[in-house]
Amino acid sequence: MDKNLVTVILAAGGSKRMNKPKQLLKWKEKTLIENSIKITESINRGNNMIVLGSKFNKIFKTVSKYNIRIINNKKWKNGIGSSISIAIKNILNDNHKIDGVLFILTDQPFISKKYLEKMINEFKKNKIVVTKYGKKNGIPAIFSKLFFNELLELNEDFGAKKIINQNKKSLIILQPDPNTLVDIDTPEDYNNFI
Image (tube, rainbow, N blue to C red; front, side, top):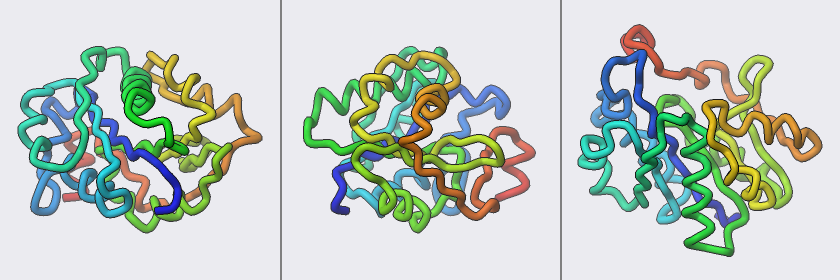
């Protein structure tokens, strides 16, 4: 990959609707979280990070064997914005040669390597690349380092939507196959797709 991106898996949530950590739900031969790690390794070997929070110790046991930096978001109850913020803080502490960050979610197991590579190919150094969901835009998303200071300020459950909405001139919007835009949020969702 010619662009210097850090890939961040956001996996800190408490899975309230699932009643158990969805990160550890069985998916293919492994778990949802390991599926996300496998995809990130296939596109960006060695420059990956995962943000955990709820059930940290339990999930850590599953992910610690992988070559991925593990961040513990102790403020995970504040929502996805706090996970984005802590990821950016760690990236800035580590490496000043980063062009941007690619965020993905554990509960979107049908997002493919091919689609993420398309996002990376579309990324320009002063842009934001987002995924279109009906009338909304969201994650997977790539943010240029120009937006890191704004991302650092996040601490709410609505994540980076405000930053996306305030920077429409910088947006590149991609629409994947609708069949890949599945979030596994409830036991019914999970049972429909396993």
